[in-house]
Length: 349
Image 1 (cartoon, rainbow, N blue to C red):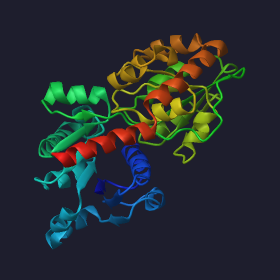
Image 2 (tube, rainbow, N blue to C red):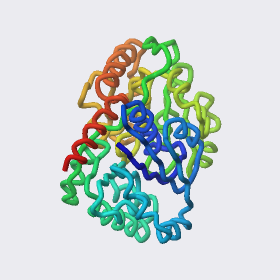
Image 3 (cartoon, rainbow, N blue to C red):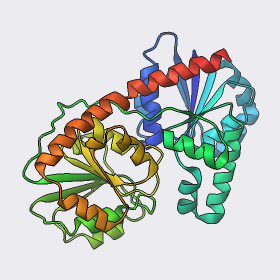
Image 4 (spheres, rainbow, N blue to C red):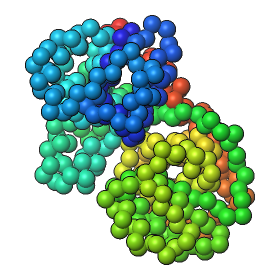
């Protein structure tokens, strides 16, 4: 089975990390060859290069020229073409009549409109939706994304939940005297980290500690606002996310929209419990085992009241449940097996 993955970049982002786990696990299967076409390189190039037969990186500007030079004709040599995200989906949608599949990683309108504004965001959303309708097979990264696409846009898809690598650490569930919280993600309006910070700033400094990983347009503003809070640490973008998660107890997210949050899944893999906002993907994870964490409404007061009631005993019990929740539902091996089965179905059609 020769598979071409079309990716927007090889940078360390949620969709790319999902694709890497897929490539890594598929490469171990018999008679599977993985090829990659990306529009920008990135820090994960060497990771992909360990498992892919070939990687081609072409610029967005060079895409049109590449197409006219016969790229479409050469794509016929693959058994299946799998795209992730907007530009790859646009290219994939032009390959009608082939065994093509797309993974949908977000609630498109909820993502594009806040990020790019009504004009540009609306255009991108409509172009993406049009492209997805032209792709033969579609995968939604969570049940909630799949249901949203079906009910709002009458767009059918197969739901295959994102998966992440198991922890390489000896996961611990015990908690020290100071409870360690962590938040991971871009500092923007969609991620809505302001809510967490407002809530956390009211908690006693001697009992609670918060580490925040990531960068983004709101980072500087928030660092200045909370610079006097000694128990709040802004790390910035880091390649050591798993290490920071392993050394924490509770994962926090006040996001307004997600596809299926990779940071939450990685937190579960490291044995962290969670307090997260009541958006559909968070509710989807939580419904599998409500004893693993807590869902709250997306307000500073709701987060504050939830956090202040946490004790080491409560957290220890939840952490044990969280690790079991991950092992049963969100390993990258489980995700890959489901994709491979779906690929096999597509090739039989």
